[in-house]
Length: 183
Image (cartoon, rainbow, N blue to C red; front, side, top):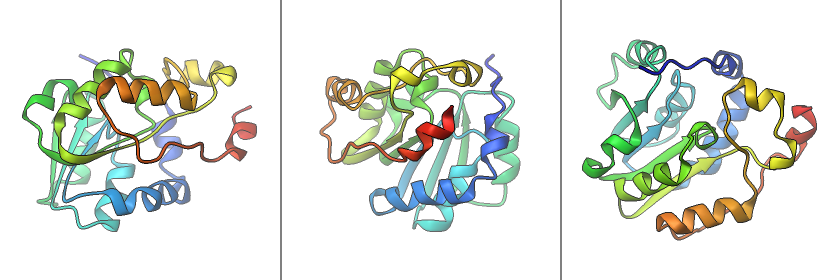
């Protein structure tokens, strides 16, 4: 049974402008049947529901200590289902228009398996929307404290996505100012 040991979920939940910025960037690509992998405590999920015409939002969360918070937060919303587990377990039965993973892939030990599962869980033409930390050269104590396995370069992420079967519409660095703040 996995329990998330990081403390950043509560800390960054207050960063509403940051998350709005991300969802604004993703907004035009989010379809009516959406999966959020690694939903945490629902910070991104809440913004997805407010911003988009999502009819079905499946929140997939492996951490047993986060699932009760998700269930409580979205108990009254018939569009939302919460699954305690991993995307890799659900992929064969999913038919999602969109899979979203914001600050998740760096926490996944076998990211290639996650990406293959995401590809398998999408309908033809479906979209994977991800945000990951960049620049392995700045991997440090905060990454270790937040249980990160890695940071990405564009070429490394591109290669992983292509190996999983994805075609890439956009892949770029965001928030270069955040690199200085990381130190």
